[in-house]
Image (tube, rainbow, N blue to C red):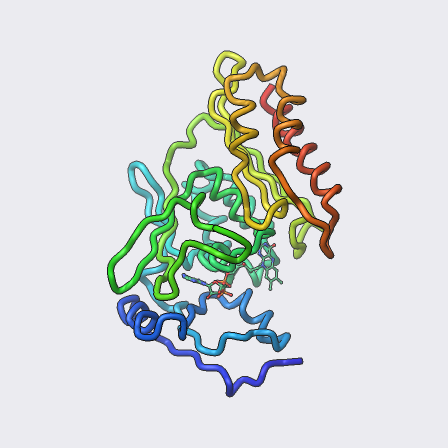
Length: 285
Ligand SMILES: Cc1cc2nc3c(=O)[nH]c(=O)nc-3n(C[C@H](O)[C@H](O)[C@H](O)COP(=O)(O)OP(=O)(O)OC[C@H]3O[C@@H](n4cnc5c(N)ncnc54)[C@H](O)[C@@H]3O)c2cc1C
């Protein structure tokens, strides 16, 4: 059943200062509305419980991609279309561009934002594993100023996160330290486009004299939150590339805890995750 529109409010502040002022006035009363691609689905289905929104779509301060010497900074409102066409992202963070190109269809890519994907906090979302592997950092803004949170510490439980009701996600920072890394990203879903992931796998690694020196692995849809597989990374780090497969499979099988749901089964998700790790490790030979 569709929602009853007059029971909702949407305010459009002129700048970020006004937006955070509104959020602070009665913490929890107002919530940001960015591209609306997650929120509108709930509205259409009559399941959007929260009633009061702040339209942040026009806030210029939350837009743009800045290229600094040591980091790349994306405004929270950066869309998937903008991500895919950015030359530095394509060269240094190719998995983010690939995830963006496999997120929804063109309309969603034009309207959906990276910030919305992060705060919507779906364990099946496609950008989070990539952001975990690239060691992203989030900048959160409120009337008290800004604070930084490493993305790996942001999701604390299913749909729970290190974000206060009066805070706005303003920027996502990516350290420019990907030179020489091998990148591997796979989204496994029922079909190529417009499908929610059954498993989403992102990994990078560096090899030095046949030894694995810098390996990072993250997965989506295999736990209540997107996870960085630090135990698997630890098991593989410093090992010879040709001896890795069993070691990696055993460690990853211990580290992920997928569930059965309408999209897939836990068993399938484990098998696919292990196969993707195998495939990734094979590419390093
Ligand atoms: C047909 C369809 C296909 C889709 N396909 C995919 C897919 O393949 N992969 C995938 O990962 N997702 C997919 N999505 C989900 C959605 O498009 C993404 O999660 C998108 O990035 C959400 O961004 P948004 O700006 O539209 O968020 P919104 O809907 O505006 O907001 C989502 C949530 O984030 C909060 N929020 C937004 N911005 C901020 C901010 N700056 N600070 C604090 N809170 C904020 C809002 O309050 C809300 O709770 C799909 C959705 C649809 C409808």
